[in-house]
Length: 242
Image (cartoon, rainbow, N blue to C red):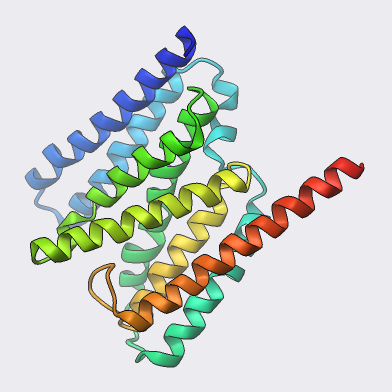
């Protein structure tokens, strides 16, 4: 690893770690519900801004995170890939009519900020600016992402299962992000819609779900893998022929 890559690694991992610890330290001290909810996202954004100032090649920062990489294509693909899960849950589960507030706070906002911070910032920058290989960057992001959902379990087994499921989900999101050329919008769209479907059809209060829910979720995962490989190979053929 070159010196500049080692420095970039230190900046990215330090900013990421400080944001996580700052959240853990500040959030319990805040009484106002809205502010307490916003604390993680504020800490993440501050860490991203600081890292953006400290890193060299700042002009590549936004591209590495993936916010400007073909947003319409990413959103369209995310919508398409989410359909098996959405349709399956609509068929087999009861509609729960959640409030708009619940959809925004449990689906839209987490879907955007978790992908921005864990996939765009951590995985994207480690690969593009610190020279990490995909597997290493994706694994560290997936493990931390999974552990961050440990609180969802009421028992040790439930907590471990929820963490495992979300870690696998984090690894899958990282792969999609990477295979689509650091396109953050495909994973933001998928994450947001999958959370929304979980709420709309009252599947479970955690990320675990039952067998049918997981079959629906697996159908979306398989479609996304097949569709991504088809798209990437087709895109490469078209590019090569030009």
